[in-house]
Amino acid sequence: MYAVIKTGGKQYRVAAGEKIKVEQIAADVGQEIVFNEVLAVGNGAELKVGTPLVSGATVSVTVLAHGKHDKVSIFKMRRRKHYQKRQGHRQQFTELLVNTIAG
Image 1 (cartoon, helix red, strand yellow):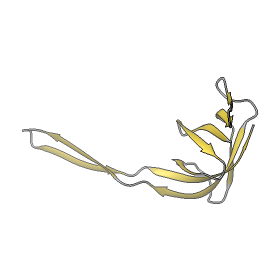
Image 2 (tube, rainbow, N blue to C red):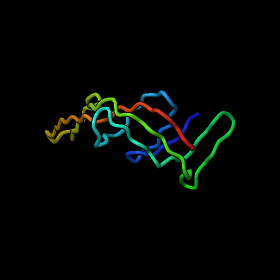
Image 3 (cartoon, rainbow, N blue to C red):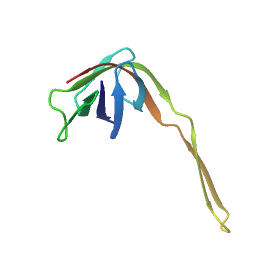
């Protein structure tokens, strides 16, 4: 069984027992979270697609860790103008373990 959930402005296809990294969520490590924004639920050949959400469907997850992704380097340059700018960014994430999918 799998589901498509929406969190942090993105959509993720999840199944029970999977670990996923999503945009940072304000929750403590070990805390259980329930996602109500479920866009689709599939079980074998059967698929329920919401308009836009599947009514009554929930996905419960446990927060495993918080962290930062690898650094992304940004380099801006204007040729012949003696302009160079270096910048870096590390996006924060929350790692989740999918417990159950209901609906």
